[in-house]
Each structure stands twice: as structure tokens, then as C-alpha cells.
Length: 88
Image 1 (cartoon, rainbow, N blue to C red):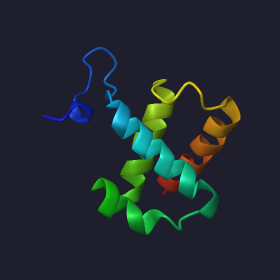
Image 2 (tube, rainbow, N blue to C red; image 1 turned 180 degrees about the vertical axis):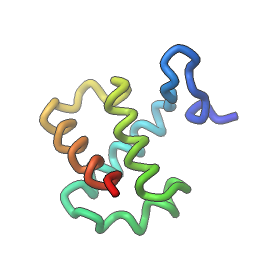
Image 3 (cartoon, rainbow, N blue to C red; image 1 turned 90 degrees about the vertical axis):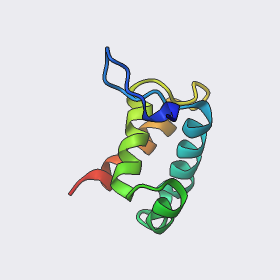
């Protein structure tokens, strides 16, 4: 079983591997300024629909698993972009 599919018992949050964190954040940051332009690449790259991908990125940010070297403003900008992608 892949590590990123395991939820911790205490918090219920997923523990992502460092490689998964890096690829999710790089992809999301790369496409954040283009709105929905990158959505067509989410499923082929990550195997999930765009809304599920952006919920994963939000979870990475919310649980403090994001790279500590990312500045807070970049994380806030990314979080806003992800929220836009998960709203109905």
C-alpha cells in the first residue's frame, strides 16, 4: 500500500511522501496563475480529477506538510487558487 493512501488514526489526515508533496506543490504552483488551464493535465499526471487533486494540495498545506522554505504569501496564494478549484 502506498504511503500517501494511509490516513493517520489520530487526525484522519493523509501522510504524503516527500516526493508526492513536491510534485503536487510544483504542479499547483506552476499552474496557479493560469486559472483552469492546467486542469486537463491533472488526471493524466496524478490519476484523480482536478477537484480531488486540489483538495490534496489544500490538505498538504493545512497539515503543515508543505516545504517550510516556501514563503507564507506563496502558500496563501496557492491556497486561494486551490479553493477556487474545489468550489462547486
